[in-house]
Structures are given as C-alpha cells and as structure tokens.
Image (cartoon, rainbow, N blue to C red; front, side, top):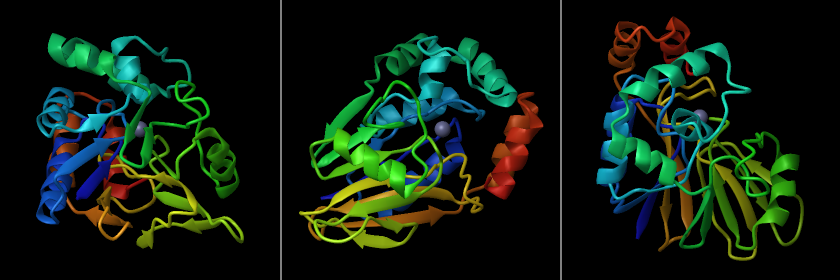
Length: 242
Ligand code: ZN
C-alpha cells in the first residue's frame, strides 16, 4: 500500500489539490496529515472539507487549535495572529468541531504521527536539528515518528550501529532496526527556499520513503490572500518559499 503523508496545508487549497492529485497518480490510496490544515491561507473551510473527503487521518496543529480557541495566540507573530482572527468567524460549525476533535497523536501503521514533537505534542516545540530529533527518539516506542510544524523537510535516521544521519531530501529506506524522526515539510507554506508544495510518499511494499515537490498556482493563492485582506507578507512568502 502507498501512503501519502502531508502537513501544514494552512488553508492553501491550490497546493493541497496539486499534492493530492500528484500522490493519487503515484498510486497513493491512503493519506495522513501532521496538522495545521488552517491558518495563513485563504481557504480554510475548503481545505478542511477536502482533507475530510480524502478520509485523511489527521492530528491537531497549533493553528488548528488556535482557531478553535483550544490554544492561546501567545507566541504567534502578528501575521499568524491576524490570520487566526480572520479564519475564526469563517469556519462552519461542522469544520470547527472537526478541528476541535483532532487528537495530538495518532498511530498509522508503523508510524507515530504528531504535529510538533512526541515528547510534548501539545507544547508546540520545534524540532529543528539532528540532535533534537535524536533526543525525541526516546519518546516513541516504534521505529518512525513523522511530524510537521517547522515546515522544514528533513529526516533523521539513527541506525542500530553508527551515528545519527540527516536526510534532507530525496529517497531513503525505512530499515527495521533503525529509528527515524521525519519532518514532512509543508504543503501550503514551504519555508526551505523551494516554493513548491512538499509531501512524502511511503510504499510499505518496498519500505521506501520519498520526498516530492509539486508545483501549483502560487499566483492564484497570492491573489486570494490579498483579496481577503490578509497580510501581504503571507502572499509574498509563498512566492519565495520562505
Ligand atoms: Zn504550520
């Protein structure tokens, strides 16, 4: 079975549609999402409805919980803050309840799925280095944890022998004796200098994990952000991918 792993859609419908279409074309039949369906982007309801329609297994992100009031806006920068306040009154009741119901952690086959970290999934800390990722490995029993939150696609492998190794992109095998902390990157607001939407594909037949970048209509989303009166910085950063 081929599993599509996505994260940090952030209300970017064009990016979500592009990624879902791409992964389906590659044979993906099941999807998981590491949280932050909403926030920043102009299409929160349609993104939630699409995720629900895909039967996507999803965990809560800090923006999902901020929009429902389950997490405070403390620590949100002004653009993030404005986007949360813009999103709140727009959400349908059904979509708000859906966001509220999202768990912090789910298990999907051999994977533990979280938004931020397995050690404190509701504290929204950032795992940005191999050292921090290696420390997180003490906090899950299985072999693989997949997270989002930082919008930085990278994977850290701890082999049974030898040193911790970073895989920044491309393909790698999930080896049964090794342990992994993997960041899925961001569909809707990449921050690694590549504006294309990021996603992961895992094939359980070959145990191969692969990052992909998928182009989408960035200009259309930028126009929607500006038309909605959301901060211009949110439009500009999509073009730069940072
Ligand atoms: Zn995010």
